[in-house]
Image 1 (cartoon, rainbow, N blue to C red):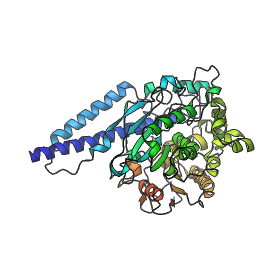
Image 2: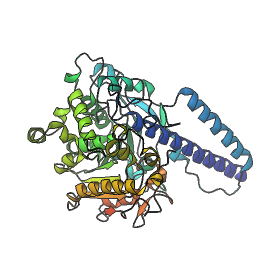
Image 3: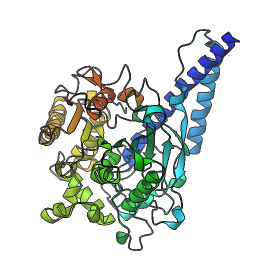
Image 4: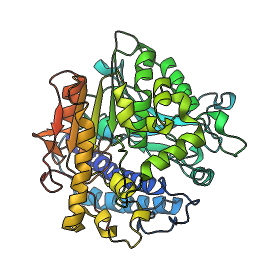
Length: 467
């Protein structure tokens, strides 16, 4: 019976590892797909056709039910093979709890509140209860997925998980910063964890007054408030420690709502925020145009974001500039940690070299794999990195702000085991992102980790390759 029990544990461990790897791979594909579908180019811009190679990368598209069925079938075959060929009477300990899928929870009484996704469906989140010493600690992570800047582009999102809960996965894996595996997530593994799904297209900052019979629901701020109220009612209100985090557009949402989040919780609670790949730059593209500034202006106007930003910022500059993190962080009071790649592929592809700035496609291969960039392109990428560090330099003297800025060609890094905390994760000074965030959050040491100054200088980078 003991051998049988060990075999069963080994099967569970093998199944868990394989399942987690497949779900992580699917997650990466969906994330990249979200980024490639969400900016900055809508159907209203004829210079940017939605069918362009840069906009719809090969094999990186929205997965249909058929796609998931194929992935499930492959998973079944692989597991069957492992089941019959890898029985070991002395398996390593199982960490199967880290791969359990977490169900989608739609906002309670959604029909009786104005909190609605772009298509009018109820917003949602995934919740896993904490345990042991982490039962009164909370980690809330905000999903990313770009923005929409026109009626047309927002209408398209109504038919995806970025605009409707009808298309959201009913179950998702929690990995990386959301993992319950103490080996993968040693500092936060037993906390209450929430992943807020993103379906408003404006980093949870839109207001219904701007809807104007568009057939769309611009309710981002309302969604945020409603979800916070619901989480407070199920235990967040008595939190001892809390961390608000987010990836990409979710990282921007974290910056926007960080101080408000702090105010919702008990004064004696330790509350901090983390933005992963959410520090978007106000930089001109290679043709000299302010593409990102123009895009943010359209988002700001379309969804009426002004009410979600400080009045003094709105008064002293063009309002949409207040949407840039460089302006938001200036006025933040809550401790903040910035995780950011110096060669952020999303910003390179959409801010520095958007399609309209490269009509001949000279940068196409470079944008798919940084190893394909020529010397002149690398110079421009290094200059873009320099702009990031120059902007961040203003905040390096603030003790409450931590940083992990690696020289990797990637985007979000906190929600995947391979980049958060594993033997093969990116490191600076022999510290992973997970270790660095923990050191900062628990005040073990000040963390201002800035990587070496080259895209090829850090061998631990997990650089993306879209070719």
